[in-house]
Image (cartoon, rainbow, N blue to C red; front, side, top):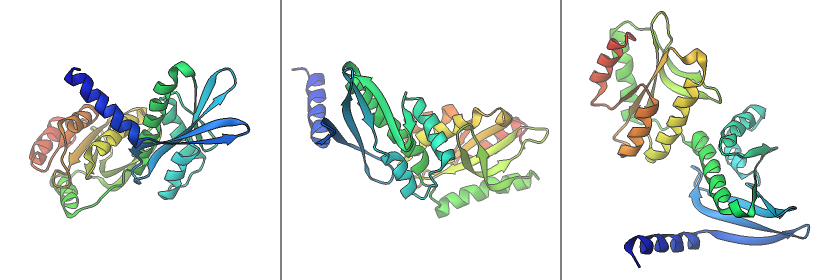
Length: 263
């Protein structure tokens, strides 16, 4: 057996042991509940149910657990939030019925569909459940951004929110466009930096999808003291934002903003 096959076999064997399954009966049909070794940001495992329906098809459901996680985290699960979650789920081919995420599939696509469903549930959770952490270091970074804007006599809003196509997003410093490009700056602090990078990759795109924001540049400042930012995480942010900076790069950020006519 080649090393490649052995590695893959060992991983799949370990992964299968980490999946917990349970069979139940409902209306004469067998329902299988699967619990995966993937977690929402609230540390709860992602669970779904798979049940057969007529015509040799299956239906996959989260049994309203995803919206339940958002409710437990303090979100008001109303029509607006449902619409936003539905928009994200739709990108995975998943529909939202009441509070339930649902996916129909045929037997031949069951494995692929289950994986697709897990990714969708985790994406929704990551977008909404990545908490903004404030540390002394992050407050210093925000203050330094404000300081160089003050030196340039640029008017800005602190702790603002900017509307995206799906959601409003928290911004530490917002310079409204006023005859020159605007600027939205967020300082990113997290221990799980990759999840935060993925979430802000979505947030940046969501902001750009609104025509009214086309004159606003997005600047992200990452806090390297709170966690390790991998090259992959940086690549996500660099691809989505107009400016990506660290504490050491802030003087360069000021120069970039000046060259863009923002300050």
